Image 1 (spheres, helix red, strand yellow):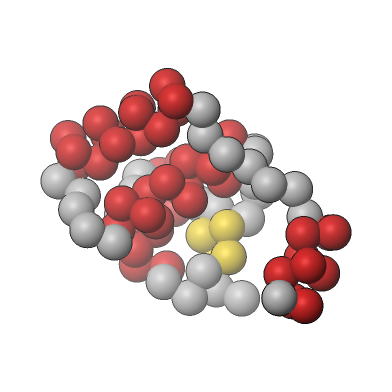
Image 2: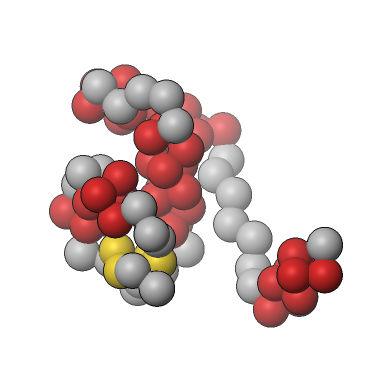
Length: 77
């Protein structure tokens, strides 16, 4: 909890609204994305919404398959 509290003080929370969430799920369905990869897709959509320049992840392959807009932002910490 200490780590989460520290992060909460320094970072902004980004959430998708209903239309954005639905669009992301529809895009997943059309791309054949299933299971836990859908969570990666939702995180990626939040990164796009926040106009993040870099999306750090240890699961680079999970994110690079989500399209060029995401792939160009993905980096390993």
